[in-house]
Amino acid sequence: MNTRHLEQAEQSAQTGHVFPGSRIGVLLLHGLTGTPKEMLSVAKRLNRYGFTVSCPVLAGHCGTEADLLATNWQDWADSAEQALLSLKERADVVFVGGLSAGAVLSLYLADKRPETVRAIVLYSTTLVWDGWSIPKLSFLLPLVLRLPYVGRRWHFVEAFPYGIKNEHLRRRIVAKMQSGDTSAAGHTHTPGVMIRELWRMVDAVKARFAAIRTPALIAHASNDDIASLRKNALYIQQHLAGPTELLTLYDSYHMITVDQERHLLTDATARFFYRSLTDEERAELAAASPEMVPDHVPTTEEGARDGCGQRMAETA
Image (cartoon, rainbow, N blue to C red; front, side):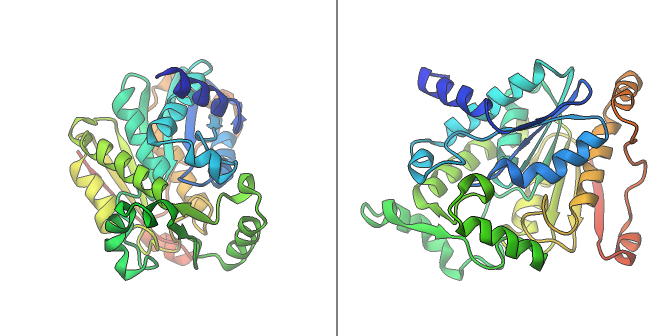
């Protein structure tokens, strides 16, 4: 890291949320123009199972648009790495998870710090913006962003359904987004130059897929409105070098960490992490909380009876 990157990374690591627990840690990374609050439901539930959970603010986020525009994807990655190293100071075992662009950063950390990251969870990973709510002419966006005048001024405006299937929750979050408080629900729009930075990060990380051997749980909604299951989750499963599990959710949109199946998602996450622990590490986790990690995740048929569904597949 250069001096500017390090200063931004350290400033970012000083904010966010930390939930103390055992010396089994989880780092949760929010998405582009998002906030740590989109990870809090998962974080609090994991903490109930004994995990120490850190939800940092990525560089340039939770402030003004100018703050965001002053960063690039390497700044986001550096702040994520700094948060990882900070968590490692209080945890013997570290897992990493992220939502959307945060999932891409999780892959980045798994590649750069394989000796530190035990396993990763990828929530709604966004390699390609091709969900059903994305305008059909979005394939022209790379050309638009190259135009000297238009490219610097174009913004992607958040629109219905805002990645959320739950109508009550959607209304609440949209109200917070429109209030102007970016620390509460992020920005209402994404500058085009930041989308270009996201693409650069995706290209850099995809080039390393064949070298990433860290076990991964890939969670994605079958009806994701932003990023399709086929070109994102399934692509990742087919190209990562390490073992993967696929969790498909049937009653959520893109923001699966806050949507209708968030508890099922978190329990599947906790179980995935738990299986990679030694007996001694499991005892450490259990000693930190009276609530045990679930030993069973609902099947598709069981999920259908209570209004949700999932499918899990494992590959070596």
